[in-house]
Length: 267
Ligand code: ADP
Ligand code: MG
Image (cartoon, rainbow, N blue to C red; front, side):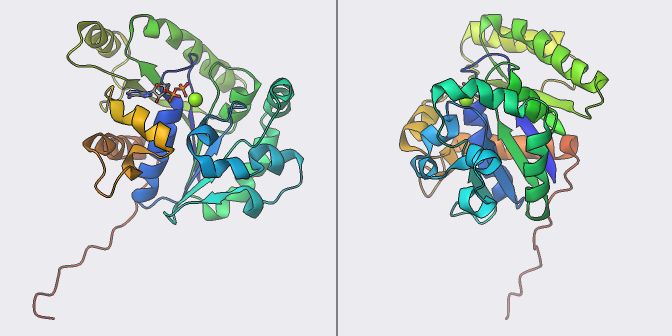
């Protein structure tokens, strides 16, 4: 099992949108995927109404619920969701302290590992206790960078945090920075993208970019990833299939063999 965390210093940059749509794309590529929401504000839960019924991650870690109780199966056999679970706002801080050293989430990973190829964590913004606990358990971090002027200023904190964890013996790497909400026809947005491409190390910024697209807003109001909006997914859903292809080698995922035998014309 590989573990990927989607994290960034800033909120509202597209972490939850990327997590949800990327989880579906990995599942469709054949990986048994669990999307775990760790944001005490329940971001994934908010956009998927069915996820509100589970006692979630908090219930599993603290309340004695079993994995079967808290995992939500979807109509894709390969995709399961683990919502964060209901939580009072005043408990969010304690939840962060509880997760910070990473040992609780290690227990979750051990329980999921036999039946899971990819554990994908959506995290709250910043590098508080919850995110640190997740990063201590992650093989890789994917960081969305919103294509807007001050975005680049938020990157040093990510790099420092990963540097600190690696010094502390944690084997986590940045698998890439993905530009989100990119508007190729908007000069300001394009400038930020070009700045990222020219100033950051070449292999840090992923080739795949997520365009700003009203479909994402519509999808979250319907409570689904864009890939599930209608029978024929909107074109923008294809972006996440490309992102999967780009992330596979960076995560050390081999790719799932597709059955591809020549068709027998005269059978
Ligand atoms: P985060 O999890 O980092 O706080 P979200 O994924 O919740 O960010 O995104 C913040 C808001 O921006 C949401 O309303 C979401 O629907 C919207 N959004 C995210 N990505 C896009 C995009 N590529 N195009 C348009 N709107 C987007
Ligand atoms: Mg979020």
